Length: 261
Length: 164
Image 1: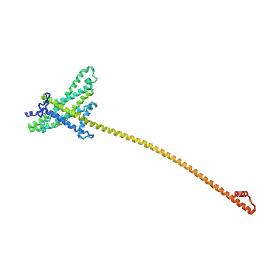
Image 2: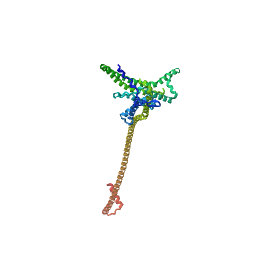
Image 3: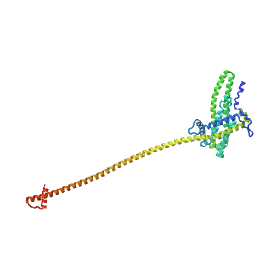
Image 4: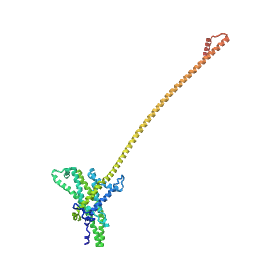
């Protein structure tokens, strides 16, 4: 199976500078405009266009305005359910986070390979998801300490803990707290990477089996292709769910900062 | 895995562009546009619930007005009834008084007429006496050739008239 080496399921994650900006730098750091950056810009622009459609501000909304208001209402309800009425002030941040990740996930799923372009999912890079996770975590820390000062540490000591148990529990709670940005960032990165790898591996099966023999192509290839259709649908679901989980966990963490326990 | 293999060369570009694009999303879309969109939705919700409340209040007011109307209707019916009764009583009293007055007048006229008739008949009687007395004196003078006195003639007439 020498040919199978040609199809590298990890190649889709490779970052390539575009438009000859390889050596663009800022303060000694490379800031090349890559395919990853291109998809970030695309996600931002698509989201911008989407929200502009909701700016008609009519009393009786059209379909587009309805869709935009549905999304903001969805985030509002999420925040109010988790934080209470004080959660309203986080609508801009959580909405931006949710929609940006959602569009990144969905744009990376577009079958642009059919027209020779290379779709890219920047949420499959922990350098990107990590920044988003650290951002959410920082907001939690800032809000927590600004609102409660050192009392914020009482988050690590559940109510009714016996005095003897406070030190070990504090340690455990602290670790679970500090793990949050990693779980937040890595969950998204792993889910997107795994899905895309699986799709590429199955696509490799289809191509390699068809190349090996018609019999293998009809059996293994067809089965793999049908499986790909199902998994593509599943990946659409994962794209939405992962964006939702990121927003949901952010709001749960914000609730800790806002209301302690 | 390019995510790890390329990390040294790409992390700064990834972080830079992510902060730039997400900054745009957060500041322009999240802070600039989302509150307006949400404000429109909130205003609509407020308007709908306000309209519903107003409708409910109007309904309650209509019920109140109907109850008020019923009360006033009953009141005015009672008042009308009372006025009717009073008017009836007044009319009865007025006609009674008028009847009494008319009765009295008629009685007075009858009395006056009777008085006049009596006077007339008295006068007539007196005249008959005088005429009779004159006639009696004439008859006495012619028959007896005696001049009878006025009084005697008159008394004789009276006696004759009284005997019929």
